Structure formats: structure tokens, C-alpha cells
Image 1 (cartoon, rainbow, N blue to C red):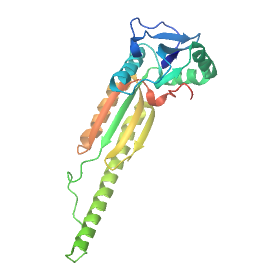
Image 2: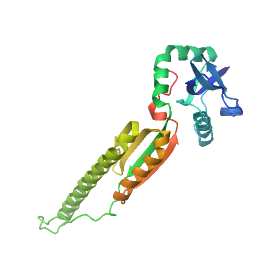
Image 3: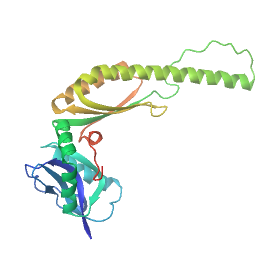
Image 4: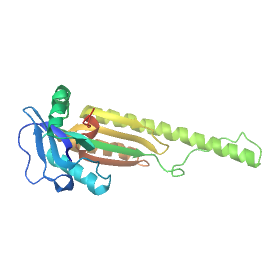
Length: 236
């Protein structure tokens, strides 16, 4: 039994570029109309393996579409049992999908991860020594106090970094999704919806903050399709 694998949703015209191949080297086509269409390919009715080759093929199709039109990406392994099911999906969610396409039109997603300095790489003022003992218990307490002091200082520094990013980037972005302090080292994981013509300025402003906070590690990626700004599942 065959199914339809979904890569994304677009406005119906114009036709897709020729030669775009999806998973299993199946040709990519449009399903739907007249206002909305799903970008799809034929597929077996089972989930594809989650490995680098298959995920990259899914992403390559979405990125190929993104070059000439807005696209709402679907999540990997979005499958429906035939073209009629795809058409019903588009009709049921048409209002929300049209609004989402307008929201992301002309924009791309930029990703940013900021890593705190590794322990011991920044000088931290030593605490005064109120603990007079020399035993292992006193040494342990002193180490814990110094670790807590270092952690509080690094978190305060990370908060300053996040605030400066906001001051410089917020005027450039249409939307953002910020996830601060997810782990002890991961100060910030963020996604930004940025207009095509503002990407260069966006990169420059991230660079300004990176130079101010040179002890932190910055990983800036993109431009990508707007995965974090689209409800990318066939049943959402």
C-alpha cells in the first residue's frame, strides 16, 4: 500500500522546479489547489529510517522549494494515506495555513546557540576565607562556595549577553523563540525569523555581541526554512 509523504505547504502557483527528487528518489509533486498545495512524493506507508541520509534528503527538498517561494515545512516522516487525505487536510486547515504563509513570506530562520565558558577558563575572584579549618569538610565547603559563586557570576554574565542580543536583534526580527539556560553550559538556544534582506545585518549584530563576550562560544546557523515558525505536522 502506498502513501503520500509531505515536505511542506506552499501557495499553489507557480509549478515546482523539475528534477526535485524526494525520499526513495521519488519525484516531488504538488497536491491541492487552488490556493494551497502540499509538496509531496509517493512513499510506502511506513516511517522512513531516522538517519543522516534520509533527513538530509527531506531538508534538501524543503530548501529547494524555499529558493523561489514561502514554504511551511512539515516534520520529517509526515505521511498521509493518499492524495484525498492531503486535500482534506488543506481544506480543514486552510485559514491557519494561509495566515502562516503570509507570516513567513520573505523570511528565513536563523539559529543561534551560545555556550558558557568551560569551567576554569575564566578568572573568578576568590572568596574571603571565613572558614578557618583545614580538614576535608572545610575544604569541601570552600570548594562548593566557590563553585556556587562562579555559577552565579557566569549566569549573571549570560543574562547580560542575552539582554544585549535582544537589544540589537529584536528590531531586525519578525519573531523569535528563545530558550535560555537549558543546561549548565548552554546559555541560549534561539531561533529567529529574519527577512531575507536583513540576514547580513543580523549576522553583523551577532558578531558585535560575540566580540563583547569573547569567552562564550557562539554557533550561528542558517538561513533555513522556518521550521520553528510553522506547525509542521499533518495532524496539528
